[in-house]
Length: 48
Image (cartoon, rainbow, N blue to C red):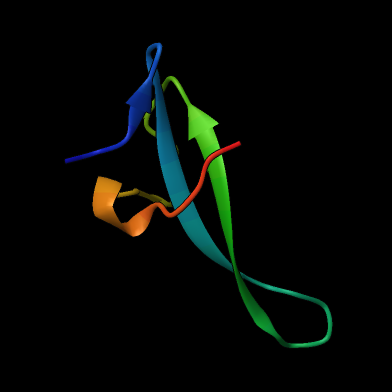
């Protein structure tokens, strides 16, 4: 189940930081972004 809140879908994307470290970022979008995948509900631990 994809996490949707008031028409906004939660997505995640792995990005490479300047130091070379890979970090996952999470963001909401009403449209399908060019990069990133929808977050499956059980993977979400806490949304504040």
